[in-house]
Image (cartoon, rainbow, N blue to C red; front, side):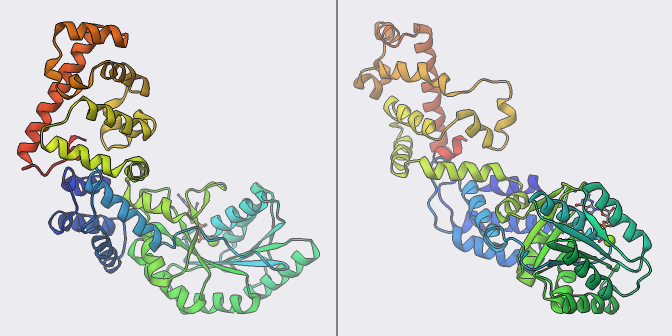
Length: 435
Ligand code: GDP
Ligand code: MG
């Protein structure tokens, strides 16, 4: 998927602004990528239409390719779709009851243990309750987890009435100073009436402060249908997305949010008891896009790049008037953006290329010194810099004639490259194409 997206954004690379023509291909690729990440087809279409609308006509900063800007727009849009920010669970009550629902194998029992461990870590008194009355092994499974995390587990192996067991657990909690009761329930392999009936009765009887629906993120499109079926009956408060440690991209998060309009509150990323995280829409958007680093590059560039200056430079490049003053100004801009290596590393493919090469702020120092030792005339017309001037500049900047020669050569090569690209792009391509 990541490869596909990179290809999609590649299409846009090096083009000056986002237009109907260059956006259409990319949006199509984004849509395909979202569907690959298990986002429901209809939802993916809606989302990409919105992205397209937002993207069209936006001017692109010199430092940022249109593809990167589109990534940022996509990322923001996906984040917003998943609720914008994290939402906590409600644990008010005496005791507060948290009801765990979902299909068999979705990860309810594992998550119950994790949640208990998580709340215990916050210094709360928690009680786990085994209400899966159909499989004796389910009770043992919860007991083992409880022992592992040192949380009490309430169970009545002989009792076949889930509601009665849960009510007894609440009574036990009150008598034993437990503030939160987590109720693990029975699920089935598919949605059926008996299961729905039981979980609905539990909800009515216990009046939980939080009813969570647990869903396996690897079930793809089915996850949405299951979520809808449970929500129609239970009207749950939040979703837990499990098994995100696999290679699923988590597109189910978008579809579920869109279809049932309930927040995802936790994610589960492994079988161990500490593999639980609060759900953060922005991080999930990054994961789904698989290009998080590009997004932060775009953000950084937007913060610090002087747009006006960028346009001015672009114009000079197009007219083949780029000189050492412009070069210096560009160095300043890059330095403002922070650690050079970090920045270059964010550009796809660059990180690998830079491995083992030392690129840091200091490597620009001699270059700056040399340019600053030039007269303004020399900066604007480098061809004036003859042998004696080179010697003077080297002495003035504390460098060698060799270093001055190198810089002049690099500058000439760069200008040649710019000239070629101006020809190729009919004057439309800017610095972005240099990336
Ligand atoms: P339940 O039937 O809904 O109670 O599901 P379980 O909690 O028993 O989990 C079913 C299986 O999935 C077990 O083998 C768990 O170890 C495993 N499991 C649960 N959550 C995760 C997770 O986040 N990642 C992975 N890799 N496995 C998980
Ligand atoms: Mg279970």
